Length: 392
Ligand SMILES: Cc1cc2nc3c(=O)[nH]c(=O)nc-3n(C[C@H](O)[C@H](O)[C@H](O)COP(=O)(O)OP(=O)(O)OC[C@H]3O[C@@H](n4cnc5c(N)ncnc54)[C@H](O)[C@@H]3O)c2cc1C
Image 1 (tube, rainbow, N blue to C red):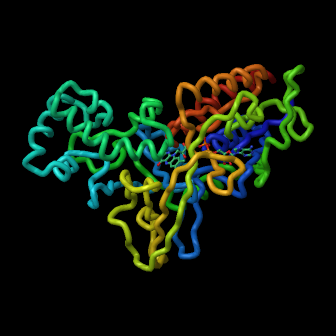
Image 2: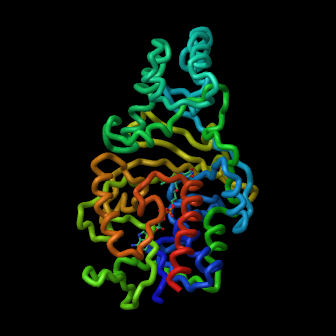
């Protein structure tokens, strides 16, 4: 037996640490390089009493209620359906684009034909990726899809990802749908929630277990050593039985096969004396220079009675650079054919050791949302349980 080390305190690391500590009754050392737990879901109250999500707005949404039930063990949740608007041609248009947006963009009379065609061609579906409209054989739908694509989708997407749209993974592109009805919810999942006391509180409760030791402000890479010949890993000189890694996989191996691209965000905050600033909680800016969206956090707080004024956070995407002053946090893996082939080399490197578990958005280089991330961590735990029980 050796140490069980978990690197990272986002959902992936925190869930695995808790399950191992609680259900397998094993000691777990959790290492986090930031000064706080929670990874990109970290939130904190600012000096005005507003709960700010420091790394951009996060909303929990899923069709699987067991995810909600799982999280409710660690904190109270309240229902919240996210609403967005897109600022296009100096006016606010509903996002996701829906039949209301068609009327806003084309005018009521002109929208009749296209709305009826969308209903007929995509009968039985409630949302369709914008790119499917562009590829549609029907001329009117194709023209409308191309109009949306050129006006909003292309500019927003290339600003967000920093590469031309045709290089971006289809899975990522298909995340931007049009609603084939008047549904105003940004996401069409059945269960949409936010934690009453914020995400950090939820993480705090999850990591609060006698078998868990959390080391903040600690870069695990400074303590992990690989013995390539013996295929052994040690942490701070001690033998590692299991290394659960949720950070950037290329950094784990000192970029030996090259660096993987990630997008980061530069987030600018503005305090306003007014209690309400934006017409809804998030505004997307497909046509503006540099910025992609603004979030007004007060609008998503469970209880804002003790708050005065409001804060708007605006995101400017940029490339991740570990050593830069701004943009030194990897937010989004940029999945392309090329980056996938680099990733594969790292994955094979991991396999050589047999006791490294990769889990999460950065370690697996996938665009996981929280719900997928949580479900996936729970599945990984079952593999870990088997592995640790077999090795007893
Ligand atoms: C701006 C933004 C908005 C999002 N909005 C939503 C949303 O609305 N809904 C949704 O479902 N999902 C959303 N997501 C996705 C969600 O953030 C991820 O699914 C989730 O954060 C992934 O958790 P994780 O544990 O895999 O990774 P992370 O949260 O990134 O955690 C990894 C942790 O590992 C630590 N770490 C890395 N390297 C080391 C090291 N060497 N030593 C020690 N610690 C290390 C990091 O500091 C970090 O804390 C959003 C993501 C972003 C970036």
